[in-house]
Image 1 (cartoon, one colour):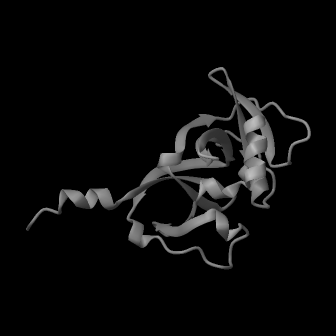
Image 2 (cartoon, one colour):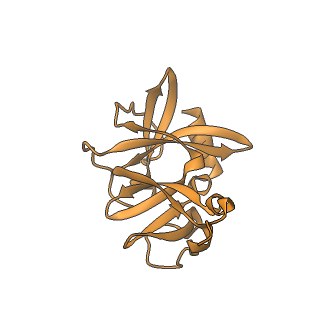
Length: 162
């Protein structure tokens, strides 16, 4: 039996999976810098509700957003599993570092691009513009988010100023 081509391994995309409520989401691993345990978040007055505040990340203030609130879900409850996913977002040709609260992080997994389906037009409470596609992991659907489309230019500008 012939061995599979080494090039076949390059046809896999890697994603970090995490949960918000009962739903599983994923981010392209290329946008994820690190995952942190929940730490003290300092609130900033006069910001949108989904912006929870800033954290100190190695001497730098990094804005943290609550994806649950951004997606119209109840506020993230702080548990032992709650974590902050540090991501890079493209904004005006520059990379902006921010944190995203998640109920829990699951794992990094690989998925062939041809197995990712287009986002359904209904059946999710999340704006489909934010969704790159829907994949399947075991018996669960995974909503693959496009981190660069979740926030408007105005919101990103506000995050950068935080």
